[in-house]
Image 1 (cartoon, rainbow, N blue to C red):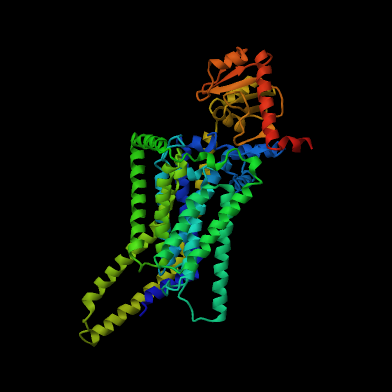
Image 2 (cartoon, rainbow, N blue to C red):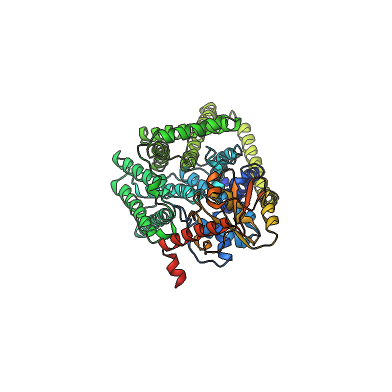
Length: 617
């Protein structure tokens, strides 16, 4: 038996499904703006705009505008996704600060979109409004955590705000969630035991109750399955080509999860093996595609592995945890991370012990748990010492939150329905007058619902306008905040000292990259190491053109001491610029020594990668 109110609600939602989801997107945008504005108003903004790693994309764009040859030496990451996204935003915005700010906003909105897809698949049988509401509640978790993060330290356990950066693997984080959604869709379509309840058309992004078998429906189902498998393969190849972390964060846990479900008899082996083979083949395909890109990579991913060195990561992560305990917001975030991890592991255990759960939920629960365990334990076993590799501990639990919310609310709904029915099981109208009174109340209620239904479009439209205006104002505020803070401390000092002269300087990674990115056109800086040699790390080697190098830029992290004077001699002048110092060697013997070191090492790097021959040709 269907209640009339439910039918009317389904019809209203079916008439305007786009409006409900548009409301969700606008609400997510407003929440995102709050988080981004917080980052811009704290020291965390340094990580977005000025950190040595964070300026790779603005440097790339500046190199393109200068017409330099493409001789880039990246890290182990190729930035296949990050580069085109940023270049489009840079074209549409006025300066790097605007582009980086909008990029941060888009990253969080993309996270919401994936959460919405996962929620729609995890909550079959629930209306679109409910699914959007659950998606927003889930989305609020990482945003609330972002509001707790405010330091400049990229190696802290402030993991959620790393999604706002353009350097620390945001496409790989989003690919983790996208792959989970694709796998859950495949399991739901392939497994013969998986059935979807009969619901309103808007209620789920998952499959509806299957129609009677016929050639047309079988062909459509086969086409959908092929499309999902192709999407999974493309996602895997592109992700691994750009960043091999995808294989560790997503592909390996997914293969283990699929084979585990098949071994438990929850899904047919064919359902598990086909996507597992595609994941493995996609990883190998990505590795093969990286081979021609070897000249543009500065390090083999295997160099990050220090298997057997367990004490180093334990000490590193222990120090990072102690640092979080030094401030109240850090304690709260550690509690949140621990809670998310614990809930994820409990959900994984529940999936193992409760075969009656829908298979899509079993897969999401187990995949999240396996990912959390693999990353937490694996990062110690392989000897890594950077917290950015632990981002799945923050984002993999988002696969579980919507489903758990749905289970809890389903249980609550069942209890309420049971409580309502008990008093009236044997009640009957006392007389005809009571029946007529009840009928009159029903007619009145229907009239009220009809009036309310007419008012809903106007109210919905007003809410859409308010959210849209709020989004526009909030975006403007975020951009304005980025511009107001978009200054590199001490940059004017270097520009003032140059006084329009076109001199080339050099410095170490952390000292010069912000100045190199945001300096005036006459600021030319080369990246060198502690031995005064060219350092090929996220820089265009075309910079090392053999020209004179007349000054050095040093900061408190520059690994130089008295040996610098022994090598170059005393500088002509020392210019203090607050956070850094300029050593002027123009016209001295040190200028010749410095120029020779940089020119010879830069030429050797270019020749080793085959760039010198291309330039000569």
